[in-house]
Length: 92
Image (cartoon, rainbow, N blue to C red):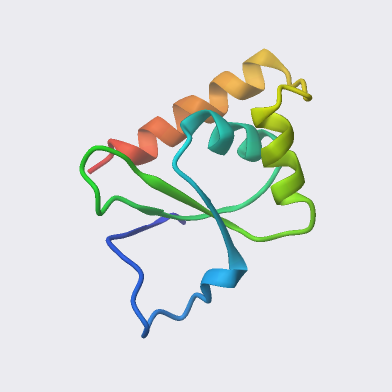
């Protein structure tokens, strides 16, 4: 289940070093395609959402490869991931 957080606070049970964050929908979709777990969405800013993933080995490496265009994924898988993230963003 995805938690829709409004902001991080010192009493949150999630340690910020345990998560990888991105504002980029494409990068978040790519990470979902690879099987990384989306922990929550931070929608504190009404113009953009912060996607928070469980920090796992190589997540930063794959995010960097996305931005440098060094990776390929199946088109349908990427489309489905984008659609799933948009559904989560606009469900409330």
